[in-house]
Length: 255
Image (tube, rainbow, N blue to C red; front, top):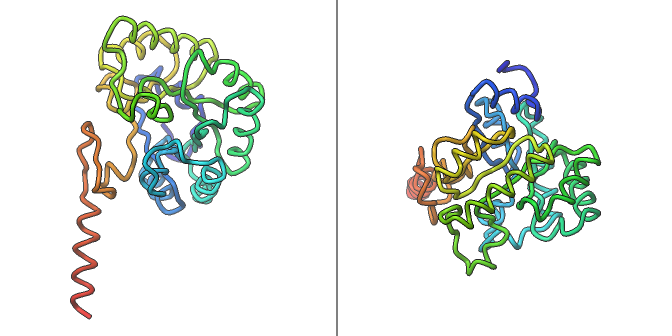
């Protein structure tokens, strides 16, 4: 992949075809978007995970469309070579008309594609977004916007026959819609591997085993910058939170 070339959905399709691994990380502001882009990450997601790791909400269901626009504008000011994708927040895509209006607002803020949670149940919304000329990324498996419906628990998907059948049906629907990529969150590794092999879109895993086309992490999890909670499937590469506390204490003691 040419380091000077702008990443597009077609770039990611070509990476899957060439069996090139696809790295994706979240970015919520200008400096992190710029740093990650300079590191060569091809996908930057302004995720609604910002609700927890930036805004202090208990889950993603509190994030508003206006908040997503605000953070997308900040990340977009980095003018990344990476593909900048914005999450459609909770209840912002309940009808095709609303989905298009919400997606257009994110694009106006600087997103180059949008992502939403669900499969066959949101197929009309996906088709409407694409008909408006906006590239779409899917999200299957554990759907954080539905966590309250599942009793507040983040549950692994695809563990039984019914769960596997639903995942394959939803993946087939996304393939019918010709989405360019799909996040697979907390999907059992054998099912994630089969979806990756069976369908043409690039699969980007998070807690779904090693056999997806790529992986995504919430950047503060990777950096240890949100030390109060770390998902079980993440091994932080830094301990930024601990370092901040140490450096600040040392500075304050030196005054």
